[in-house]
Amino acid sequence: MIWWCKNRGVAIVLACSVGLAVLVVRTGRSIRDIPVIFGGVALRAPLVFFGSLVVIVAHGWSVARNPVELELRSRRPVRWADVGLMVAAALPLLATIVCPGLIEVGLVTSRNVMIGMGLTLLCARFMSRGLASMPAVSMFLIGVLTGRGYGHEAWWNWVVSSGASPVGAAWFLGAVVAGSVATLTGRARKPRVPS
Image (cartoon, rainbow, N blue to C red; front, side, top):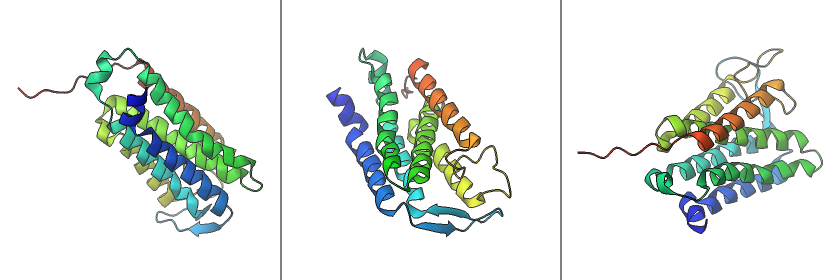
């Protein structure tokens, strides 16, 4: 498992997660209006809200380092370790909810990170691993640019939904379960060998 940790860059992914947790604790109470481009209500969130992107991109980089040809022959539970890394990266962020006044920020940040990493694992099954985090990053940025709706939350905009929102909870459950199932059950594709 030491080689798996080195190959996946586990230390970097966890360092990004812990760094974001520290930023949430230090700056989570400074709420700002984030302007929207495509109508809607401006997003009121701490600037650390965008730190979720750093953890999602770091996880995407980790997934891209996956040697598919070795995983085809591996007897070790590397797929379980990939799912475990997703959970381990969210734990420092979830721990921020014990700080007074940071329950909402901690829940939303950890939820957004878990959804992004779940979507990355799901997309790594069906597309190039180097681009696996791009759908999650794109959805994150589009969600921020569109902002909140007037009086309701859009079913697809998990990024700006509140911590107690059914939209965020459904995306969280769906992305984590789908990403985990795709990682654990999918057969790794053999890389193309030029003839």
